[in-house]
Image (cartoon, rainbow, N blue to C red; front, side, top):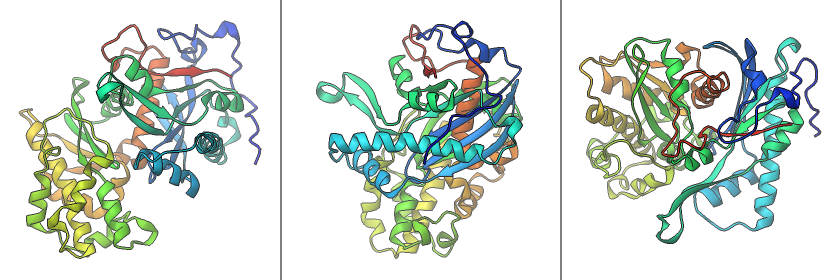
Length: 408
């Protein structure tokens, strides 16, 4: 399949239209002068999330979602990602090269999919945001303490040339270079989303790992942000053992047929990492040992599934009770991520957080499965326009933490 560069009314950028591509000023100056901007976002996540793509329009702080698309990883791509990211198994250089090439082609295919259904008048994005799949992130050097780094796949230069537009990418790496811990710069975007709410809101994204962001919308302030515990990682593995159709209990229907084991839930919820104080970061694999706990062994597969689903809700609630210090109750618990589709998990959360209402971010014009890519796009667009937003700059202010531009 040949991908043809986008033509039509895409912006023409010349050398005089651009600012120097340096660590301190990587933005393309012409973009900031546009009253409205169209942005295509390609975000490659874990095996279940695959490649998520959004096509958005921005005018000031307002956004419009034109279209979304989801592209699952082909089997061979998934196998190589699992071997490197989950098992740390060795890859031949030829396999790594093939994976890099294949993921690049998937980026192009995902963009084509998301643009295929939009009207021709808005069919040309002004720039792209690319969150490449991270195969590995961690400490390097002797004793694994000297420095952190990450390993990604996918070619942003090829994508920029194929689309004929600038592409901003390498967000985790630039955060590391700036002295950060290697996180996506989504907090500024979350602050923009929170402007459409009142009071203090709890925003919980339930991907493979659950992450809570607490925002005072009135003060436009981030109170704290941290991973809370397992998201869907244990749920997915138990669902596969329970022989769910498609391998995932996406809507929680099978889970609803089981019963959480209360004693086992108490034991699992006391795991040292889950009870650790914020802020903290987790990779999905650090919760794998919980599935081997003796309390789970005598349970049948469906009750085991219900128990680990309850654990996700319980760990989120326990985290909130430990870490939330404000006098007033939160106005709402806003849910996003793949776990937002699991109705049984949502019921567990509602029972725990009552009387705090549990709501989907869809009410805020945010696709529930794609809050992370959308808030990343909001962050980038605010950065492009030079808006005053607190960036996650790490400890090295001389290095721009946001990302690296690839120009066509």
